[in-house]
Amino acid sequence: MNPDSPDIQQLKDGYLLAALSHSEFEDVMAHASVRTLAPGEGVFDQGDLCTHFFFVLAGIVKLGRIAPSGEEKVMDLVRPRHYFAEAAMFLGGRYPVYACALEATRLVALDNAHFLRLLRGNGDLCIRLLSTLSQRMHGLVNEIDNLTLHSGAERLIGYLLEQLPEGAVPASVWLNVPKHVIASRLGIQPETLSRILAKLRAERLIDVHEGMIVLNDVAALRRFS
Amino acid sequence: MNPDSPDIQQLKDGYLLAALSHSEFEDVMAHASVRTLAPGEGVFDQGDLCTHFFFVLAGIVKLGRIAPSGEEKVMDLVRPRHYFAEAAMFLGGRYPVYACALEATRLVALDNAHFLRLLRGNGDLCIRLLSTLSQRMHGLVNEIDNLTLHSGAERLIGYLLEQLPEGAVPASVWLNVPKHVIASRLGIQPETLSRILAKLRAERLIDVHEGMIVLNDVAALRRFS
DNA sequence: AGCTTCAGTTGACTTATATCAAAGCGTGCC
DNA sequence: GGCACGCTTTGATATAAGTCAACTGAAGCT
Image (tube, rainbow over all chains, first blue to last red):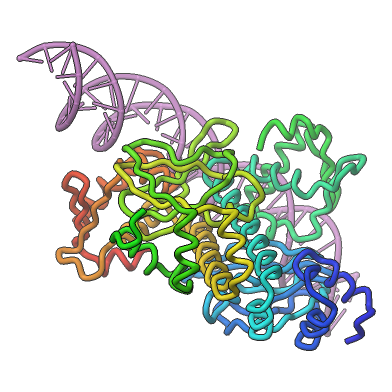
């Protein structure tokens, strides 16, 4: 793997690995590999032996869970410059979710065993990882009170506002993923999502063109959620 | 604080601090204090500056969140031998939940700044904390698919089975906390909890006496959830 | 082109749960 | 004792969301 590629630069600049010395980073790279995935291709299955964690360079990765009953829930959509499955490293064995690419995707796979060894000797790296996990936990806590305290419409609005790029004019969001995936991510049925979207459109709060959603009145939308 | 008290022994034997050397443990103790709380007394408020994390020696601590709208959700009920608020240490500043005692409670408060310093020099301790947080995250992920994939009745049954002490005959659970707290923990209204309980009783799956719930058919209950 | 497939929409209907209201029932207190 | 208070239960009703089904339209394939 060419250490000067923009891919590797991206990884190196990311929060987690920025603390590493040059030789430590080289060391990480020696046990890392870049994987290219076709749309729909899996990274790992729920229950697989957990050997690596990942950093997304390009594309979108879907993290999902299948209940014993067969029902499915999208837990997260991971976008470029984000890690996933770093927590599973400490969970003793198996991935609690499955991961697959939603579109053509490129990611870095980092070796768990090797990374753990590195961690043991680098307090700073530990602290950073602890901080990353804490933030992720905070996100999950937020998610939980979203699910219990807010209606489907409110959750959708919250999601749209989250996705809204800073200072986009007009304020608009590209979904990038099929609507039924968004629905599962929000914990509602596709039909319900469709109806909520229709209702918001009827109230002139949003406009929908293909996969793009224009937020006509961000202030009003913020008042929900 | 007397280092030989059973309280301290309990703390020392706990998973997190078991990795410490004698002198390191002494060091932690020098910056720790035991707090005694009356029923209903607060430990910290949501949004308070985050200075300590805690270990419960006796009693029950309620972790809750208040949404801007004023609605409230119980996030967790922390029982003896468990830690809470360890993740907030890395979250940069403020507690994302509030914590209060549900009954007379005794806990150890550990100083964040001091613990962070210790963490930096002790890879093993770091790994343990990472592992603790990862398990907690896994719990939250479970919680989320409980909330989205299961009905109120299923969540209640899951909760009861979780609380069920090993090998209790007859299989029974003491709630220890007011039912409306359980309801909030499960993400349902008190009225709904009451109705679910009534229904399960009508089906002879459980019996309710005061705060004690007898599970008449654990196998059948396990088939749900 | 014609066919199939799949995502999304829309409508009719069902169901779970929330909400509102009233009543029961312990517990502590004057 | 009797009163008030908070917790719980029960009943009636409302509402959000799920389910089932039909239809549309776009994309891909032969």
